Length: 200
Image 1 (spheres, rainbow, N blue to C red):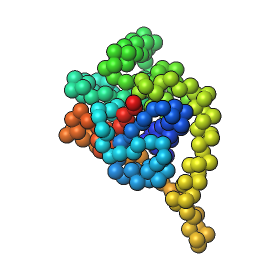
Image 2 (image 1 turned 90 degrees about the vertical axis):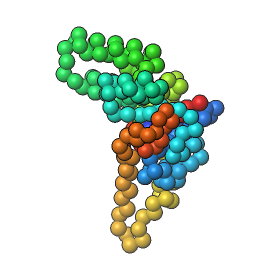
Image 3 (image 1 turned 60 degrees about the vertical axis):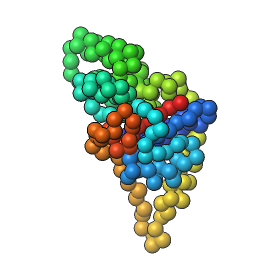
Image 4 (image 1 turned 30 degrees about the vertical axis):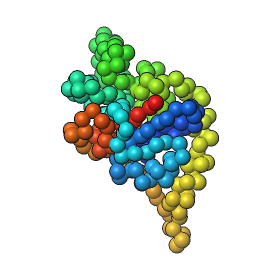
């Protein structure tokens, strides 16, 4: 379903697990209508965030220093995955991992915790946001499984099978759009990958 949908499905489950939190998500206009149909009751789905949020990006740390200096909260959901998959010496890998951890702890860049590489990537990706790191994989897995019947029913209602007996295939767009340099410190859904998040 694509990275954006994995994040949305994860946020849907996390919002149920932590009912006291308010999660506002800006998604690309191409995804907003479908996201509102499927996720309407637990997430505040908007085209622009009400405040500065976390901007999820596929760009690497070296490409983000201008954004960091401008006060943007850049979340790098794949940085550790890419790092783990590169052929490097152990020393170079250890140095880069340590640098990423320092940047995350200093709140310069936001990365998922290093121990999540082998769990569901939707959970790994959203845990780049510090406020969402307290959720455990084992608890999330049970809660996500309980959400599936609700989502399946909403999908059947939103996208009914054709009456002529043909199969019905639903294709979820990824929502990836080019960066919006005019978005400033705020987060517009048209920026970085069509996905931004404000967790309060």
